[in-house]
Image (tube, rainbow, N blue to C red; front, side, top):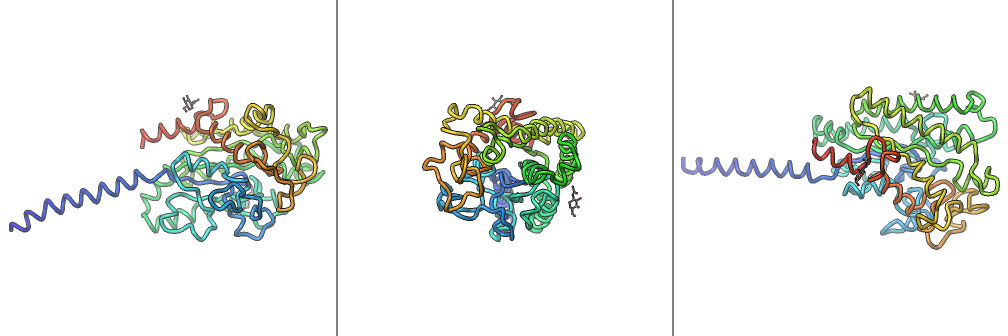
Length: 370
Ligand SMILES: *[C@@H]1O[C@H](CO)[C@@H](O)[C@H](O)[C@H]1NC(C)=O
Ligand SMILES: *[C@@H]1O[C@H](CO)[C@@H](O)[C@H](O)[C@H]1NC(C)=O
């Protein structure tokens, strides 16, 4: 009798301790993060695929700590998802195809992005085996099944609903499709304005699917200044002027994307989709590189030919000594320094950059409401 009555409060106490430990653990875990899209946000999925679209040789990763080795990221160091993970207090998202992504690592999130892909299935066909958008979404579903087996259905649902999502796609639908070759199939099918409308309507379907799969906070970036990247300056630009047709493409695409996102939010009744105007952020250092500490926004750090813009960045390419002085790491992709500036704007930029709100506002709001 005596043993029982003294045991009961102890049992209750330890139950309380266990429960609060579980709650504490759930609260202490940084926000889960999912990434979808193309090479701007790929953390290394393509290293597991038979494709030419990969960043698996030096000097890629030359500033990536601690190894300073290539990881599959198209950057000298961190890319945009890495820097967002850091702001969340989380480890970097593992590529979905990485064998290390199992057990508790799954709760950090996952990176489904794949270099070379676009909104359309026929974008990047020359790269053969890449993870196209519809397949990234299938993997997201598969991911949720795997997590369900670990933490159960209702916990999985809230993990996904409370996660932050980043999606970056669309640039390749111009560079590696419409404008890839003169008289491309898509350019014969559509004049540019109609092509952009078609892209936006297909993108909307993908975002609706992402919502249906449980995503509730989604950062959607527009395309950068496509005509001003070193590759286009080398191939199409006249005397260092940005290539006009690609600039026109970005100028048509970005505002329509933003409108489409706001329209989706109205339909949903919540600010699920956040437009990140990375094009405008990038344009700032294209027009005034010195203001941001760059010596150039025209010449890539790694490459060859005019503006170091021809071919790939390889061990044989020219390589700049100080990567922080270059807005572009290779012929297409921003340097880590440029990525840092972009993520600063994503965190705390005004409404012209982040519509309807920036990431610090999102984090503050969601901390109150969940
Ligand atoms: C892309 O391909 C998948 C699989 O074949 C298909 O389900 C999807 O509708 C296609 N998307 C577009 C935009 O054609
Ligand atoms: C963006 O974030 C900062 C905090 O870093 C905040 O002061 C500012 O008002 C925010 N701007 C908008 C438009 O949400």
